[in-house]
Image: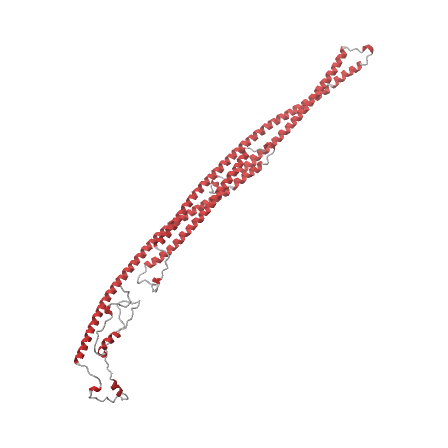
Length: 490
């Protein structure tokens, strides 16, 4: 079918005149009829019914007399041409048959032209009706397709909105877990610092108490546990940051796709509601030849479907990672508290052992002091006993010395002499024995004093160890964070 406004191609649109054997003047009317209907293409803003600009004009036959015209040059209007009786001086005359034949020919051509015009009018009216129906049908189908397209865009918009809401919720949840993980990681610094300070304080123990005991082993284990928890938390924190970046990238794609869908929905909805009577419609010549499309329905739907699948995949990965972080926080908090309690038990046991040793040292120190006191009294008694043996020894020696002055035979080794000698020897032996005992007592006293000094020094060491373990270390460990803080809630 030809478009409205295009030139007609029907055979009857161009009437063909019947070949005439007469002079051209006879067919002047038909030729003038054909030549006086010029072709004007229909304008784009036509509105039916239309009225043609060309009207039928009666043909006029004005025969010219060339010889007469030449002879009449220079005559005034009041002067008349002279009558010439000789007909052969003008031109040849037609016969009546020629006149009737010419008329019949003109009648037939007129009838043929009228029939062609009538057929043209009927066909044009039918064509106009068909084109109107076809245009209406095509416009309806375009409107229907636009409506289907709008519904399809609304469907994908709802899917994008739903997925975008889910992604935003998941991103917010993962962001909350990230903050909890950061707080828990920060809370781990205080227990680590406390454990390291406890190790430093315990290095200030003195003497025999500077041992690698269970407390030190538990403290070293606690430092290792806390550092291990920190390393795992740091690794998961990096993974959470990377997952948040992936979530935001997927969310950005969803938002961009949704913004494009909203714009396309607005445009297509506007096109769907455009009517022939709408304002703002205009001609855009050549727009149908412009192909600015970059996708087909399959690739268009696949693009949004890929965005949705990517967002769902990232959301599933985010939820899985969030669950792992939750488990990590619980595991690290339990491990830290378990080691903290084990270290505290070791501190308690060690403090009890140190306190028991201190009490025993105090008891031995008291006994040693008592023994030192008694031994000092004993030494004083020995010294007094030695002093007391001086006069009897002096008496016995004086007697022996005096009896050496007996004359001659009176120097008798009598029992008295023997007894005096034995007495001197006995007293001297007693004095030697007492002096030896005095030396032994003094040596024992020195040993007791040394033992007292050792006990006092050990007592000071135990007191220092108890002060470090009970006051400094246990005092700092009272500030250990709670489970709620280790889980990152506060």
